[in-house]
Image (cartoon, rainbow, N blue to C red; front, top):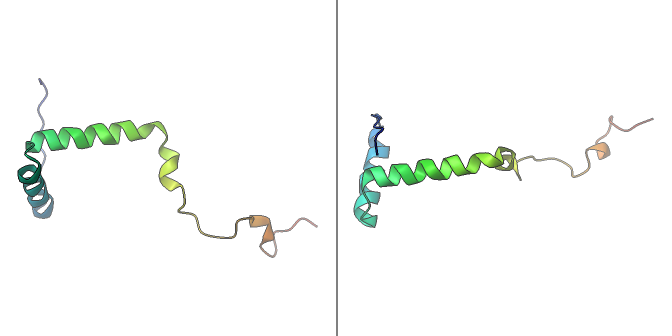
Length: 69
């Protein structure tokens, strides 16, 4: 690994990272790399992050005032 970065973490995130590293036996760097790989792989279909978040009638034409005349 040739590239290194420095990241400042809030206390709660640093505590979570330390606890997770101890619990899993993985290094903190390995956990961060795996998390970055997961995020990188999810960019293929970013619109799916919105699936199921829109509330309202199933058929928007059923709302009053929006029907064709």
